Image (cartoon, rainbow, N blue to C red; front, side, top):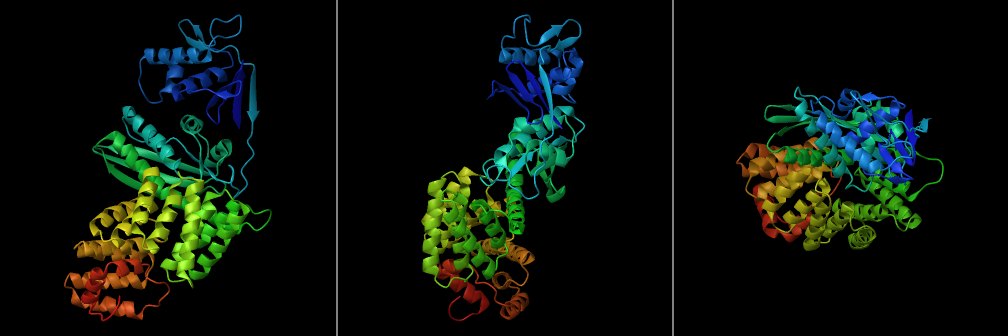
Length: 514
């Protein structure tokens, strides 16, 4: 249940946290919004200064002058009232304030979202609820507010989802409801909830991503940060959380779309189904995904996502050795990715798609430029950093590759294709003369996809570089006996860096080509 208050030309929507005059949105701060809402809910009765301060500054001790500043700002925003009142907000001597001119209060129940349906122009909606401050010092509450705002800003850089603005969700700092109710009132499917606890020189952030219709937790994480600079901490937290949440949202949306079988099919539905298949990382699912992306491109000529995914899947087919005609697939992928950039040059995924196609076309200069553009548009975009690292390694710059790949994997630790990225990072460490780090990353690749031959080969080489001959021999046996399900996705590396290819053969005592 939500309330909408009408007074004069104004309408305040308590669920969305918005104030409009004759339909036009007004810029009102959160403390001002809390004060105005309290006055409206009082129905013309006075509200004490103490109560207004409690609502506007929960858990904090502030001076009366802070309230006076907020009331003055509200009066200026509202302007002159109808004849008979000197101000919209009337001062009640020795008590507080009242707002006498409420003309209507509308109770509405927003219709619940259908399970699995995108809710905003084909894009699922997500809202970040105010993070809870768990510390004993109320003066530190600003950190939780800062994390909430920074995370909203970070998520808005992704084009797959419609992100609810801060004003709309901030009302839930005072209004305690369950996840389903909050999502229904905000007209979103997904909610991000979390808490902040500062202890000494450490800040602990706990976050969870909730699928509102089912009430299920799709993802949860807890991270510790050094308390060096609060503003830098807020940005770092937002980048890491946004980078981790976004792939989970994509996978869940794709799975939901894949289960829908009735009714009309939109281009977005086809893209969502295709992306779900894409992440299975098999030849049949990649081929089926490509057909869906092609259909989506035909249905909707303006759908950027259809083109960028068509670019990605063609690059994947070539990378994993599943293409019957690599040159033709790379041409289709390049054309599709270029169209995606032209349709939406501010979409980081479009630039990523162009970068990954360029990598497998041996155009590393284009790949580096496109990857750099992707991370400029969205600093928390893990794939942008990862493909930048891949392009750097394939063009012969192992040290630069380590930086980009390590950062990308920190942002997104759960991508189903991380077995590739961990292996690329392992090789970057190996060719940067850091075999111990290479060994650890190759093991991480095998944790994501056990028995993956390319990672076993890298692990054998890392052990050999460390002088661990028995371990190297054991991993070489494992590698030779493991089934071949994909190519190693590294052919451009060996093709364009013959010296490194020779180093691998020498470490593994292999004749001929890599």
